[in-house]
Length: 114
Image 1 (cartoon, rainbow, N blue to C red):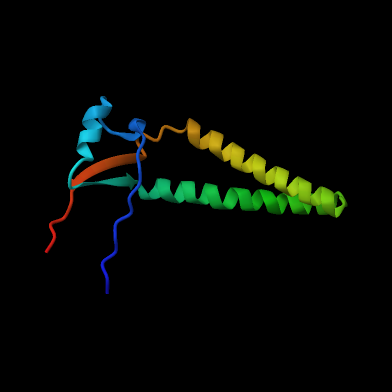
Image 2 (image 1 turned 45 degrees about the vertical axis):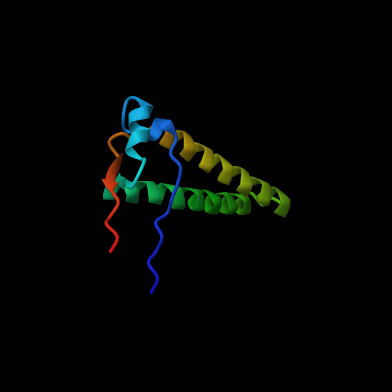
């Protein structure tokens, strides 16, 4: 079985842990890796928010359109509008949260190759 290649991604300077971005960039050079850590309860909370809130808003929009006896095109328009509003609201909510206590970036040396 082939070894899995680690995922690589780019970080903006604002994500780096050091106050000066040069020191943070130096932490990522060479044979070092970064690990993004998140607490378990926060992971569950944000997962539920991101998956269930838009789904429930779409279901409520469809039920509401059915109760109001809207036409099919108005039902579709209302559903997409409510879905977009729920995603926009989630974006604003998550942006307001202080993620400094939730997320941490840890730098480690790459494991030795055998």
